[in-house]
Amino acid sequence: MGILETAKIPTGKVEHEYYGTTARHYDAAYAADTRLKDIPFYVDVAKSVNGDTLEVACGTGRILLPTARSGVRIDGLDFSPDLLGILRNKLKSEPEELQDRVLLYHGDMRNFALDKTYRLITVPFRPLQHLFTVNDQLAAFRCFSAHLKSGGKLAFNVFYPNFQLLDEVGVEKVELEWVDPQDASITVSRSFLRKSVDKLNQFFEGEFIFRSYRGEQLINEERSALNMSFYTYPQVLLLLKTAGFRVKEEYGSYDKEPISVCKEMIFIAEKV
Image 1 (tube, rainbow, N blue to C red):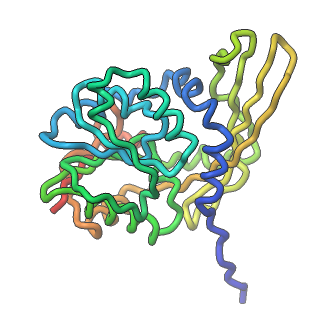
Image 2 (image 1 turned 90 degrees about the horizontal axis):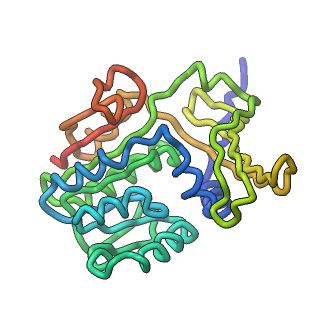
Image 3 (image 1 turned 180 degrees about the vertical axis):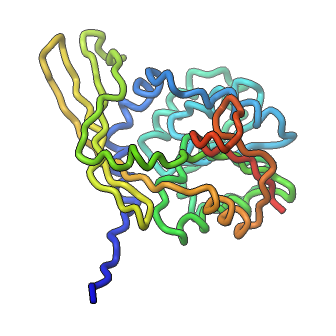
């Protein structure tokens, strides 16, 4: 009879290290990522709601700032002081009327406690995939519910797991390349290396590799761990139901394809 071993579940410590290491590359990397088409979707959702919005895991403001520029009053919450620091500096260069529409909070999506409730909470760009246990996932959804008014909405996305891709372990792939905004003579590339996959507990361990070049010469290399969980569709539905939500809209892409296309899983749910 075999011995049942307990899986080693990643902890939030890894994500803190990741954001601390890569914060300076964050904006440049995702500005270079032409695959991202989520900003108009989240801006439109926020504009459609008659009330304040909270963006959880707002990062450096990639989505928060365009939302605020559209006239929406929006608060942001993130657990990375590094990313929040970048966003605060960006806000200083925005018009005063926009600054007045934004409040920023440092906190964890599993247990934040703000003395206010919202008509909409958004959790864009897959931060829920940095939660690795059912307890943590439920804690987050219940925390969202506690900060929503009755009938308030929750909008978020997670990727649909590509199981063929998850089998690619130990293969480094270059994903993005951009010119360093601090030095135009330097080109930066970002690769991702998946190091292991736990299919039972639904997470993988990997790392981003940032390499900086001046011409053909490699002048710097940085590595940062990036672990992510993955969800199945019925699992998301059960988490929402257990936390007191009902699904109002669901899509498989930001072009609003049916969720059955199995690309992205995008939800707008209502607090019951």
